[in-house]
Image (cartoon, rainbow over all chains, first blue to last red):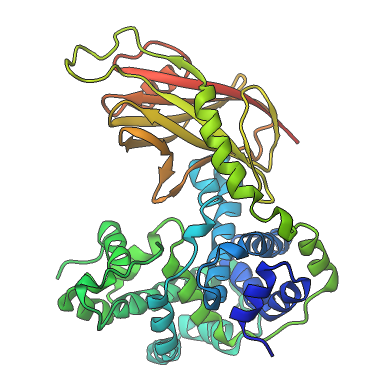
Length: 197
Length: 244
């Protein structure tokens, strides 16, 4: 099976098969991210999943690091979630349509990929370190077992969907903090590597 | 130990290797205050994509719906058109600057500041459609409500810029109030391009860019957007019609 980088290059040349394979390979994760965002209804989730792939495929020839397709795609998905939510909530505040244009800026550089490859254990370690309780149970169900939807977890715990989403966001911040701590580690300060440029 | 804040976070993203060992060790402790800061940040940055990729590593594959893929591919440009969007965007914005929208320099001009260029502002806009295509914005034209406007301003020197929107008969809404350097700039907020979402704004929309020597109060910015004289401020404004 072709890897993402090969498929991205083929998709950039217009291959519909490559588009299809990338969609089939990554749709579940995009859908889970959008659903886990927790502030969109079911119709909006479906719309945002579609918008994410449309935007990614239309900009795919500008992805400078084809092997970074997945984090790039998920970054677009999160962007679309925020944008859709803000559009509904704020009616025209500038936040609503941020980052519609700068898809070129949505490309993690190699330094981040290295961090991600080396730090795959972080999620499991952080979950294991959580005290027994609601947060540990929620993130285990959503991120480790990866089957139940946000709604199903909320129903199981007899709580609101937004309460589950907030717990996931909190855990996400913990993971981000740990990745940040490892960012650029071992590089010389003058290496000049930058994020998002 | 000093905690993370938005400025230090952005600086770290720009130059990760510059992080000192003490801060790195502090972040590794899982500091709740620093996690709060990360959780509160607006917008999306490259680290977010990596975080989500890690978190979603164990997502169970789900069969994709053929009709969903069909709907997506129907809106993906073919190779021949792939480069249209960025080219059009660049050309559109450049051309629109020349078009210049209504410029209302304040009669008090440069407020008596000698040796500095007169206070003025010109603004232009591009229309970003829901499918990601971009076209030059034309004053008075009609655009769908699922599009947004991206603003570009030209300033003779560093000024405070306010962005104000109002529907017919509605009160003005202050969208943005940011310092902007001299020259030509796309309006940005929080490091990303800023735009005016047209969603839910059907009808005529008045959009005003107010440049001022000093930060204006919200009332002053709204007054300037209405075309009233505000000391030390100049306004460029245009109307668009938002259709369903």
